[in-house]
Length: 78
Length: 497
Image 1 (tube, rainbow over the protein chains, first blue to last red):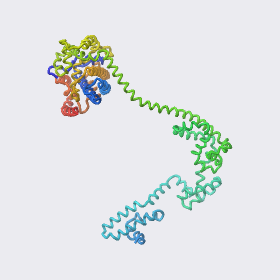
Image 2: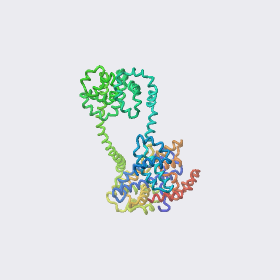
Image 3: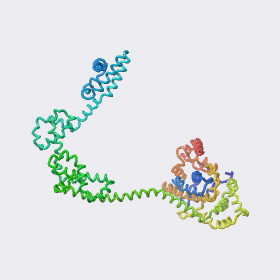
Image 4: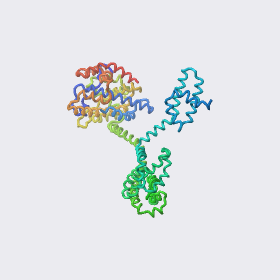
């Protein structure tokens, strides 16, 4: 990541979570939330890569992402 | 040698050895004389050979082992003693004691049993001595008497007992019943006779020397004529049996129904077919998005999101585009500078985008609150980096990005639900860091060896890490920091694989 670049829009993440939870989000929780999201993305992409490789595709296909999404979401169900 | 040795070995060589053999010798008389006589001969030969006391001791040990191996007589005796301890044997001993005085009792037993006793002696004769034969006639009436009066007197009372047995048997044999149910009407009587032969058979042989002997053996022997002759005694039982058979016929009907259940089991094979049904649901959600924005729109979505989001993000476009693919670069350039690489489709999709992006950018949660989705450039950057680390080329097609965005939305929805649940459970209206820590622990993302700080240090830039570290000097965190470095190393190693 280029220096000086923000990794993610903090306000957006806060808004998203606030909308979904109808709760206030304390000051720095969004960092943890984004961290969790990063982990989620890591898992998702890794699983999708495995799946697409099994399907014989070189790149990650949308199909494999869709196939893997439910499992990964279930994995990240608290 | 062989002829002389057994005697010499017993007396000379082995007598000093074996107190066990002294105990064994009575057994040899009865049972195991031959193997015991065979072995000492070999040992005696060896004794002739062995001159040193050490060798003798070794041979003694050998002989003792053999004695232990080849003396089944001991075990038999023990088993006999155990058998004698059974209540039956207690009764037998008591009968032996009482036999001389209780000769009068023989009169109480019906004279029929005397003949039977002669029949049933041989099994007992194996165990008992010849002297006890006189005592047995007194005992055996006692065995047979309780069984006899049940059948004699309790013809009315018996069916419940039979029902107990039969019901158990029917439930146990319910699988076989459909086969019988086909022939129900014809063979009921014969079935009844079979059952009596099954359960009453031993009683018939042993006890029917008395009055019942006329009743039961004929049905057991399939003599239906005698069945007809002796109906008054049998009818009640047969009726009870028939009623049960009817119920059993019902059961057999169910058993016959269970065969289509096997077909239902074949439908369990269909159950895995249901799981693909989930995938369409997932894809439907995607298709819903697909309806909002076509596959070509995705590039443009990136661009639009870049435009919208990057402004608050302080010009992250260029840095991102440096890392991102050429497509995004092109697309971004298209949006920003409107260069003419745009095909007709792209222009069309752009026009759509402007319309649909408003819909897509603002969604409404279930609480009725509008929320934006995470900017696609952030998502794409993350996906690209992780795709590279995961081993693929790192190219994220717009279709794929669309799917990832959908997954992202779902993830945040799920996360918001979980966090609100935790916060409300804690009695708060504010989602706290403890909620997030709880969530990550429940997600198995953090555990004893993985701290959230280790993860943050690995995945987040330093500014965010400081943000994470600064405000909360909660006592729970410093100990985590201590183990952070080692954990981070271990995790990195894990992730590489």
